[in-house]
Length: 294
Image (cartoon, rainbow, N blue to C red):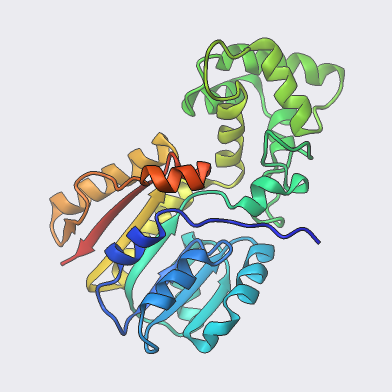
């Protein structure tokens, strides 16, 4: 059995910036493999508790095994953080001392070929965080019209969006595109990298993942739903990994502070140190923003 190792980014910074009430209850809305939750619980006294939420049932199971030593100080709920109010009601939790959203994709997703997230490993065009989700990357690539595919990848920053979308439609007329390797090779042929550091298919793969998992909608809903559940003095910390997500968080926090009742804790995003990036390349694009309820 393969053991997937995931290094939680900005873990020290999360602990330092998120904890304001030692005996409080916190939510890790993107539990993943439990790294941030373990760090929070280790920093809190025995009275401090964490509710961990993950949309992926496999991930929730991995985290449950890892966090077993913390006993009843941690509750694990399988669900989407866009429904955080319903999940908390179900778990009998009425208020929070802090909330963490880490919007990165776990190493389990990236390194497990069958999940179809990675450019490095050949797998089916899937990309679902929750396997019950009916929409897959295969559906988008093989069934969506040219205009929708082109718009989706252009919005995620792909400047060759028309060329890539056209090539996808031409290829699928011959046979469906089934795997990540097929799609990646197709994009590499029609939009080769010219002195760029990232693979030419990176932005298209990002766009597919965002669309399949409704990431921007869920982020907006998750923030809206968690606000009334936070006590005065509680903080929200959000870690983003690309500029589109960061823009949503930055703008949302700015509006919250302007309307009153909230204060920015981080005027500029907190980024990983050079040391952390050297030890974990996936941390390099991470940004943490924090806001506090007055």
